Image (cartoon, rainbow, N blue to C red; front, side, top):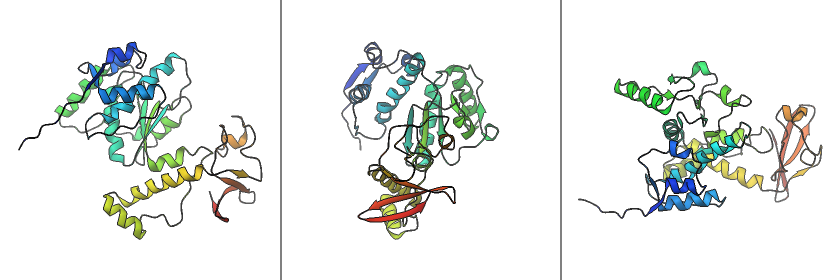
Length: 306
């Protein structure tokens, strides 16, 4: 049995996207030379993202959804370098499962080797120190051709080790070092909750939301998801709803004053340096030197240590 499918409408040439200022000129060296054009749906999404518009792409597996958001992200990185922007994370790509993040990591290695655009993956098994990183590290200054040659030799010899280009940050320590953060960070939902809370180093656990809960077991089975990953997804939605609540701070005006990098609270990671967030009411328990979280819902106040 054979099946016929309609081909995609051809979009603009990569060179035209560069000439139009949608892509940075360096993208011609990053995008494989055999790709002269993007698909029509990719062009529409890429141009929309370039103009800071929300884009929703729905198409089949293997039909280029990832390129719709990945190409604008990569293109932005050399723009930041040209502008003299400070080092730091510019994009966080969150995946529901580690396997998906690892697939994307392999893709970034091939695309960004020799480009100068840094990237890294921060998940549960990311090693703390460089000495614990497994695989082959390509020396600094190596080109994409150098990376591809080593990669091909390893595969031809049947060696399944990872090959790390100099642009890849492989350890937590490297990714946390001042000025050493990757431009592109891959992570999962669990670590996104820990590291990216807008008001400090805060992780909220929801009572009753546990992988062993009957409703979690039932629905994770129906959705064919591991129970722990299903609960992390629910927690992410609850975090989003929590952050949209009105904020009230009665004790120390934590969110109603300006903070500076040198303030002790900021150095210890308890207070933000950004516009006022929404979603929580905070108080502090001086006797225990801890912060407490109070969330008011329908007249009831729930207390919980952070």
